[in-house]
Image (cartoon, rainbow, N blue to C red; front, side, top):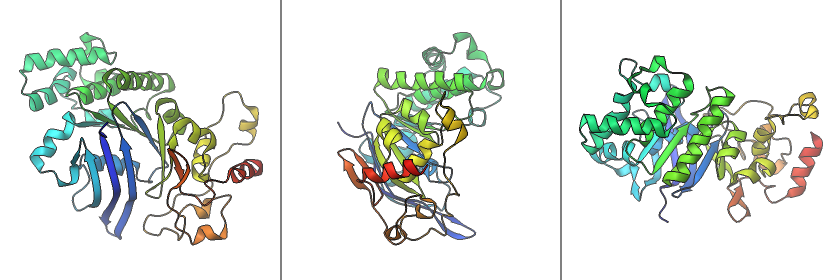
Amino acid sequence: MTPVLDIEDLHITYRGSRGAIPAVRGVSLTLRPGETLGLAGESGCGKSTVAAAVLRLLPPGTEVTGRIGLGGEDVLTMGWGRLRAVRWAGAAIVFQGAMHSLNPVQRIVRQIAEPIVLHEGAERRAAEERAVQLMESVGLPAWRARSYPHELSGGQRQRVMIAMALACSPELIIADEATTALDVMIQAQVLRLLKSLVAERHIALVMISHDLSVLTDTCDRLAVMYAGRIVESGPAREVFDAGRHPYARGLAGAFPTVGDPAGRRRPRGLAGDPPDPTELPGGCPFHPRCPVAMEACAVTDVALLPVRDGWSAACLRAADETAVAAEEGAR
């Protein structure tokens, strides 16, 4: 199948008062219809920058190189007219803060109907009828159509955002920390909803989060980012359970197992902070925080190395299962 999203060697550099800030450094991703990809990493690793680049939502003056293929077209070379047509209809984004994305003085039904009117030329009444159907498809009752955003709960507002994202039947949905601000029960409901929509509509889904456990339960594949690069990519469950990059293992270990008393007494996690993107260390950027770093790690800039088919990690120990066992023993 033709990929819905095909990113090749993406580099993104912001321009600030301190000069060039390399936010994304050589990211490549491929996603086909019906596939789900989780993009994980700490704050500042470049996840949301990649998401914004897919629909060219980056600030003016940002330098972007590489290729972002969306439905076979390069987003970076599109004219503004074509780009406006692709937004919503080709790909849509669900952001974390629904209250910041919704118009507080417009009723919900009108906001969901707006992209249908603009992109498909539908009559307002017909568009609002479809908007009500979309609301019901994401678990919102029809009577809520006349509500204003402040009259809805956080979970309901996120469902409105998902309904808006589905309004023009896009091939790709990007959920950027879409459930982070929700309580656990509502988060689970929204995640189940996203999974069912992928299965029913055969769309591609990119979920962005720092929470590997959420991504593992929702996505087929995981891509873990650190310092603007993908450091591990592979099947979600295997990366979570037995990641080959120490950073991926550190993220996974930061989430305690319910009912495990040892985890409460000896919490695991990552020491230190992510590096300043303007002062990246030499070699592997993770080596100053890595519990199993070797001398070579400080001078060797490691590309993604194959662990096995469909699974790779940017670590000199990627194929060394004994290193994983040694690190676990040290904990």
